[in-house]
Amino acid sequence: MHLRLLRVLTLLVLLAGAFAGVARALDFDDEDPVPPHAEIGMVYSYVIGSHAGCLPHHLEVLSGELPPGLSIRSIALDKSVVEGVATEEGTFSAWIALKDCDNKSAETLFTFDVWARRWGISTQSLKAAAAGSPYSATLEGSGLPSDVTWEVTAGALPAGLTLSSAGVISGTATATGSSTFTVKATAKEKNFGPTRIDSKQFTLNVVSLAASASRKVAEVGVRFSSSLLGTGGQAPYTWSATGLPAGLAVSSAGAITGVPARAGSYAVGLHLVDANGSDANVQLNLVVRPRLAIAAKALRTGTVGSAYKLKVAVRGGVPALRWTATALPPGLKLAASTGTITGVPRSAGTFRVKVLVRDSLGAVSAKTLLLRIH
Image 1 (cartoon, rainbow, N blue to C red):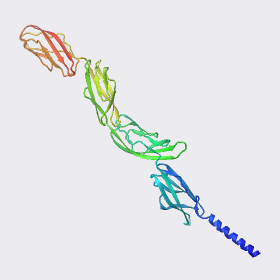
Image 2 (cartoon, rainbow, N blue to C red; image 1 turned 120 degrees about the vertical axis):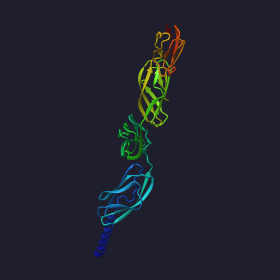
Image 3 (cartoon, helix red, strand yellow; image 1 turned 90 degrees about the vertical axis):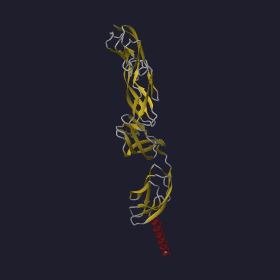
Image 4 (cartoon, helix red, strand yellow; image 1 turned 90 degrees about the horizontal axis):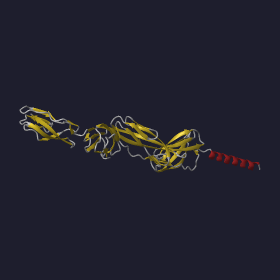
């Protein structure tokens, strides 16, 4: 009887030891691990716990592979984390070994599903900036609603421009040239969702936009036409203007037309935008001359046989001027380019001389003037 009891107790002790050994065997906390899905661009963190064996524990990949962008890091004596930002979509399997301080090992197959990107930078390119003109461009992202913070992580923006955390590139570029830089966007999904990251390289060109006009001088009461010419950017250009003289207007294609109403000197503010969206503000000085008019009321008296010279007075108009005259006394003539009457009169009398002048814009003034020759 005692011998039988002793055998039963011995068996129970052996069984208890066996079960205790199983409970204390080195292993992962999760016997059938199902890692949470990863996602291209999403900040990923998956903690793997372990138990038994002697500390510290560490993990290593025996075969297969983790998703590109993810790696294993120990964070405690008995915990490690798979972390990083996945860069490639797909399913990735890896046999991961758990090892303790005695180099005892346990292995488990981990399978990671990486989904396609669900938030990213959607801006494809940046419009060029114009040196010396205010610039503003907003970077955009698309996908799941998120709160986004932006920063430059490599390279540099053109001098004079900055990137705000809200993704706005702004300022006034100070020099022409090309700048290449990398922008990183950190997007925190709304409603306590995960954080996603995307980076993109951009090149921003700074050009020197300039403007000129085919005509800069107009005349009161004379129809005016001038073509604006843009340089430094990509044609075609779109135009607008402020400060034009009364009676003139500009088209979006850059044609200034109309009939000026008042003489004066005008500082016209031009705004041009090229085909790439670069814009600039430039100033054009436009002069409106008074209407062409012969100012002389009569011609100075001359004497037969004596040299005569007189320049006909004129006001306003736009050079060059062309002159004609009829009914001049014999011996006198009018220079077409200067409006000067010269010669030696050969006959006495009172002559009604008709003088006409035309300017470069087509304005005409005509007047009949008396010329007495003694």
